[in-house]
Every structure is written in structure tokens, then in C-alpha cells.
Length: 116
Image (cartoon, rainbow, N blue to C red; front, side):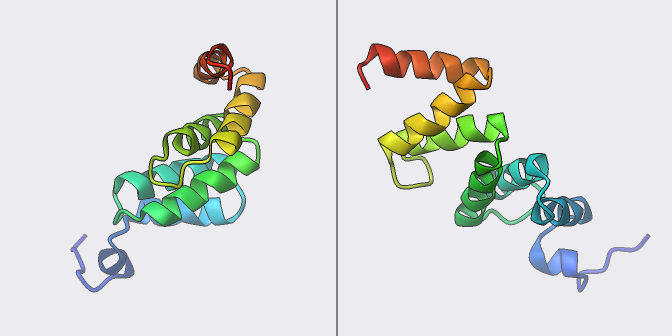
């Protein structure tokens, strides 16, 4: 198969697998939202887009995907790629912890020990 530099994938910097991952994410599949968001945040197989990556991560977190809740919450707590919001970050981390996410449980325990 020959490479076509004028294909939609070459123009957007997106691989065909990421194209279909985005379709799944836009269709409401929460794990795809999480995965696509991380690919956007890290520029994996696609041009990096921090704002859009955060948007997909938040969609996944708001839909109850535990890993996304933890990661979005810690980004809010640390102000990584997003404006810091301690109260909201704690809410996301707590939700993830209550759902059994081990790292979130640890993080939430530290938050409680520090009196937040």
C-alpha cells in the first residue's frame, strides 16, 4: 500500500487507528474517550492538543470511568495542563477512590491526612 501525503490522516497528523478511536470516543464509549484524550495530551500517533485532550479526559471522568476520574482529579489538584482547582480535584479523586481505584485511594488518604 502506498503512502498518500494528501490523505486526511496525513493532513491532520492522525493515524487511521486514532481516527476510529475518536469515532468511538465521540460515540460515547468512555474508555475510548480516556484513551483518545491521553493520545491528544501526549501526541501519540496524533498532533498534541492539550485543551482537547483535557476535554476528552473530563468526558470520560464525568461518565464514570475510574482511571479518568483519578487522572483528571490529580491534574486539577496539581494544575497540570489545566487550571488548578483543589476542591474539584478532591471530588474526582474521591469518586475514583470510592470506586476501588488503588492509586486514588492512596492519593485520597494523603489528602485526608493533610486535612484537605
